[in-house]
Amino acid sequence: MNAPFRPEDLAENETATVDAPIDDAAQKARRRRFAMIVGGVLVVAAGGLYAITHRPSPADATAIDPRLAVTAVEAKTMSFSPEVLLSGVARPVNDIHVYAPASGVRVLEILADEGQTVRAGQPLARLDQAVSAAQSRAAQATVAEARASAVRARDEYERANSIRDSGALSAEQIESRRAAAEAADARLAAAQAQLAEVNARLQGGFIRAPAGGLIIDRTVEVGRPVDGQVLFRIAGDNRLEVAAEIAEADILALRVGQDATFRLADGSEVTGRMSRGAASIDERTRTGEVLFTLPRDTKVRAGMYLRGAAVLEAREGVAAPQDSILYANGEPFVYELDQNNRARRTPVLLGARQDGMVEIRQGLEVGARIAGPGAAFIQDGDEVRPVEPPTRERAASDSLRGRAA
Image 1 (cartoon, rainbow, N blue to C red):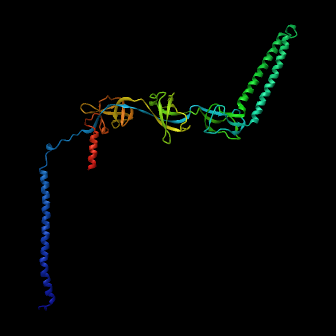
Image 2 (tube, rainbow, N blue to C red):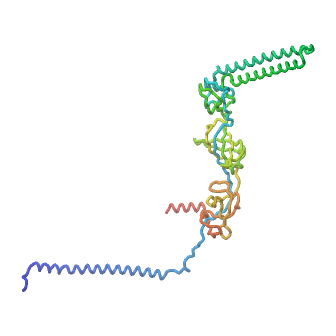
Image 3 (tube, rainbow, N blue to C red):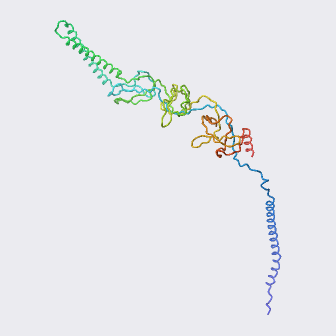
């Protein structure tokens, strides 16, 4: 039995009839894209196959030099002005220590202080004169007693000697009185010397400067008793020197009268002159003490630590670049290139250094070819490919090309 007719069925048939052509167009587009992808893959594969089949043979390739390229430089003659580095403490040339003239006395007044220049004999401090006066009076009393004893002994001897011929006294008694008189005279002389010593030590109740110079230290205080300690330090004649520690290898290169320049903390410089060489070498540090006298009236103060250098006389020597020097177990060597460009290890003895060059004291002759930059990568006996070092003009040209790039 047939179903009744509905208008919706007609609408669905019309929709199906319209969508069919649209699906066919999409399928055709997909087929075209697939064909294009497959074609591209085939083209790439064909190109790769062509490149493989047409690759040049090894015989046609450019030969590569297996030797290591190093910069070859020549040892040349150069004028060196070597410097000996110095460091040390400034100290007085004549370091005078001032003590109290007597022990057990008190200081009543300080008459000079650090930084003051004094003359020889100038009072530095005043002592308690009561004690000094008592010591002086005691010494004077001893002298008076000794003088009286000497006079009495002399009178007795003279009386005995006057009656020598009478026989009242034996010759032995007379000689005994003569000896007693001489002993009394000796005791008087000793007492007088002791009095002079007391007066000299007390110096009139003052501590005096034994020599002129600059006071660099004061430890005395008012009211404190002095008992053998240093009360003042004076830099005699206000002269300072630098006690510089010099390496053993440089000591023999310095000469008395050699000038040296020392730099202060504020950047200023002062020139000293070598006054004494090293008398001995410290076994532990392998250094020696060399003295450089400084001029008067400089900024240098005693106790300052100074650094400086002494420039030695210029000398001609064989020179090699710093980067050509290598070390093995602390010993320097270079790689010398023979006529066949083979590297041979050559031990060398180094000297001064200046402007990137090193003085070769022993081991190389002028004109010898050695390996420069790149030498650290070769071994003894290697055959190398020498490359000439770039000139200044070439280096400038490369720099300009780099800027342009």
